[in-house]
Length: 423
Ligand code: HEM
Image 1 (cartoon, rainbow, N blue to C red):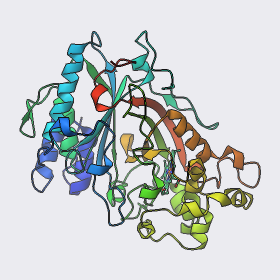
Image 2: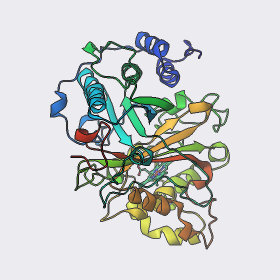
Image 3: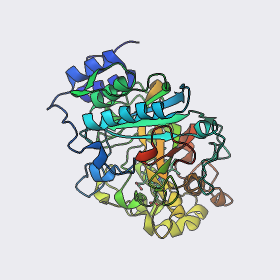
């Protein structure tokens, strides 16, 4: 595979190295990434929270208190190739995970990761998951979609501000490194888990603009604004528009402290978005019509503080539909419970296959919470009147869901090859 083009800007170079992967990309990335060495973890792995998804207390915040997600993401689909699962393999994987936790502190400047297991993994056991814990096979969720349904045994999500950190974690797990950040590699995935699918993503102010050239789905005029963290040009993931980590945590049973992951791969087609829609139309379709009428959103939305403000227009959704246009966040906001969203979005931009897209990753207590939110976003109930099922119905016309997957993310204590009913 060709290495990254050395003429790219530093951040875009690091981004393309993460996309390429392997020892060559790690070496190129390490020599190109500037700044101080990445520190080793200052917490012993035993002191980390039992929740794998407890990232927020370790992540940076912006001036408004919004979590700033790590910039580089690696999503590895894994197949179980061992002879068990048995305790020796569990120990091997646990050693692999604690090696990463010793090498890097959880956070932007280190490494954040979660491992989850899909229905295909649990199918091999005679026992079922505990009665009240449902992990459905992924399925198409919208009448107009026909996604491929992933059947990986497991998903490893690795995230860091440093490309070389996610790449070195990947290499260490594959058994290609003896040391990682001066910590000896005590366990690997070898002969237990094999990477069968590799996706990469990125998020953060400026990164989409730096990575838009030559990408299918984005006009050649390279319209993505410099201050946008996402390809559609606006900020997302405001503190008050996210479920809390508590809300998405399984609260009882053997998997207490765990969560679920829904992962979809969504293609974006942004020609009309940037070439025909006005800025007001983009604001109305992504947030809500009132936001456009009242000029509430400046630039990428950094003026909004810690809330998109859609709570003010969720109730207007039917009236707005009768007037011909509803907003994405306005519709999705209808899935709130007690005034708060029920899914925690950790989605990132994708240029895998040189096509603009989103790896939409969210955590929720149950997959049913995702399905309910997605139904609210689809808004089939709103399309009898003036809006069509796709056009002027939020951002549906610009998205095409290509793949879907569901995973159970156990608490740390059961993260290595869990039994359906762990001891
Ligand atoms: C793929 C392209 C997508 C883009 C560019 C996008 C963008 C946005 C933006 C800009 C907001 C408003 C800012 C915020 O609340 O953080 C938002 C809100 C939201 N979106 Fe999306 N989104 C996408 C897909 C999805 C999907 C697939 C879902 C899942 C059902 C979803 C669920 C939500 C929810 C729950 C909210 C918050 C609503 C509330 O405030 O209660 N989004 N999105």
